[in-house]
Length: 623
Image (cartoon, rainbow, N blue to C red; front, side):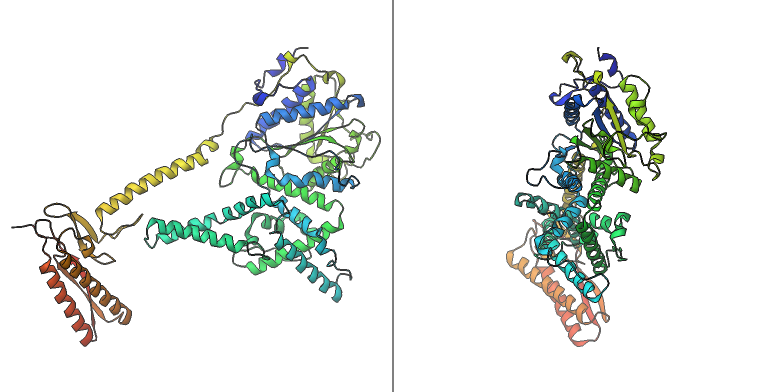
């Protein structure tokens, strides 16, 4: 049977050396995934947990191969894709299914697990999932074993033991830097992340220093120095990270309603100007959650799932400063090759459905799982073994009308999305509402001729936001701004006697001097010294002029410091520059010496002091 007629909606595109899907079921399932991805570009469609299984248990291996082909295809298409380790662990194979499900999620907080090299835009970040892992590591730390309270809660002994346990937990978290324990080679990345969060403070420090009109390198050193200082204070041993209460994961940790059941009526206020109160709220919530995680059950698993969803939702937020949601046009995909009760895959899928039903918020994660035909009924809510329960509310793909699998897949998804609100009701206990279970018939799992293999991909074009709002565009804008700034600064330095990177003292200007060259003319209201701009004149006369200017400015500073309300200001204008054709400064220097002597006499003998501003009228041309 030829598959050429199936590729009319999507172009054939097999990048990365992927040979395509080898079965009709694979082609149709991949087309359905690409249809969801196409819808994701324009909106937020509900993303189901797509569970694939064979109608006959004898073809379970073909389903696993199909899932592997889907993984290879999505990787070739540039999808952010992670593969959960569904193989049973060798070190502790006797873990209960819930703990096994937690094991599947723990490493997903590493951005390298999501194929960042082949995917577009920058790597994912998982601060919320990292915070949950840090709490789990601190809770399981051997140093906490002897500090957990043993007296009943509410009693004086119980309250005292609880405070001691909270102090110890915070000490362990501070030792971990409120991050999960990780190998030393990854600590450099954590340090880089800490430095990056202080980059805005460094830029603010540099811009603030520019207001004092220093040299450009002084502003750069001020910004870098402030950033290094904050990073050093952030890594003081035994202390919590700097500005912990302002981090996005901390705000989520305190404000999510999911954790209200673990709280003990503690404040959840997080404010910039109330660091002590915010820290107390975080400390209390951390201990409450640690106690709940220590008790076990499904709470830790659901908390991991919720943190993963929140991080992925934030990584695809369209209304963000970097417009990352508009640049990442393909949703993330989580692959579960062979889910079962033993490896925790069944419990993970149930937790995903429960969290989504409880939160009622759309997240971008698309999960594709393969399951053995015998284990497929375990995904029915409230069912442990045996066949799915029969009843008027039960809808199974197996009961649909006969049609091509491609049509049935679309029909099943539309029916699932249309009934999603009703399926989340507690009274509908026969199926997990967020699971779309697809039974694949034998004839669709038969391998095709290699000439009929197909790799279907949604139409792709680079988003406008990725071109306009990107690091390349930013580099271009910065280069243009730097060029304009350099040109403007050079113009300021050619026009005014005293200029900085962006500003200048506009009371003095550089004018053409008689005989060639330039001279500084105007009123010295700031730090301009006319003697430093001399192009001619003898060394002795130039030095004498600079010394007189220094004395006059020192006397002015004394007047402003000691008599700020009892002084008058006069302006002396004289020839305080020389020309090449007449380099003599005798007249201007003698007049300035007389002005200074008069200023000293007035200031020493009268109550009203004298402040003198120097003005240069310029060198006179020869007669």
